Image 1 (tube, rainbow, N blue to C red):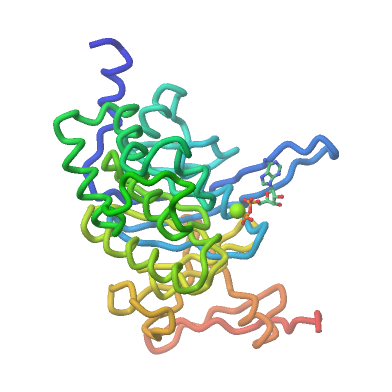
Image 2: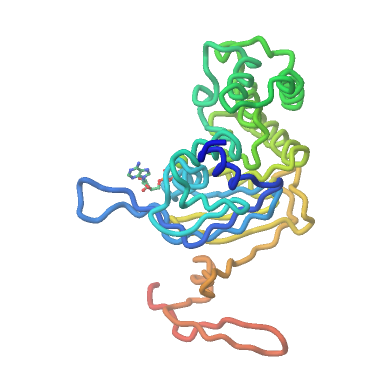
Length: 308
Ligand SMILES: Nc1ncnc2c1ncn2[C@@H]1O[C@H](COP(=O)(O)OP(=O)(O)O)[C@@H](O)[C@H]1O
Ligand SMILES: [Mg+2]
């Protein structure tokens, strides 16, 4: 065993894995100014092992940056990120190759980023297995299982140009899961799809999340993912602005389902963010007062906002 394989061994994990992000900061260099562009400003996440999670926010909120950091496409400028026991923020370059091949699967918005156009659906899945050294004797069976699970087994010999948008994303999902990753990261996976096809793809994500012991993180601007995932984090200006989770513990089949509760995240320093809508409604300015009464904790404005 050389040093590399010995150290890869330290990256072994047992599924399902949780994800913990602490104070993640990402600053991009900006050649046109002295200061950089702050894309993430202290993101905190706590994702339960095996859960299906959405991170929802408008364009420019930092969603893709966060997903790329989760996927070790580049390191955060500061902060810590653990996938299971793996310290993703401090991986060395060869550990990152291992992480990409064995731990994480990606599903991107554009089909041409998920699939090689010159290969058929089944060849695309097998190609990923080859690169990652997936056991040869298990490949055929898993290819059939995955393409069947996403409803495109009949289309296995078709190439990207012969697949509809929805089919291409489903094959993309099979490709992302080819190597039995522990986490699936998806960046706007339904961004190119119509409404009905989007619901179909979410259904497949829900099913595979259950069947594969997978932890899934989907970033999207599409608010309908909120109720169809176990937990949703709302991101705005590079910060998590709110957390909602399913009361039943199930991801709803219908995006209109009402069984959600809204939570605020308490970070490691005790910071709690008050959503802007509540700040407005209660005219909260720079200070609040905590009132502890009858076993409950209340927050009341200590100084009325003069902003409006
Ligand atoms: N490679 C980059 N270089 C400089 N700035 C970037 C880069 N990628 C993203 N940004 C900036 O970081 C912020 C967050 O972008 P991004 O993570 O792509 O948001 P989202 O995916 O939510 O639209 C934006 O202000 C964007 O312009
Ligand atoms: Mg994006």
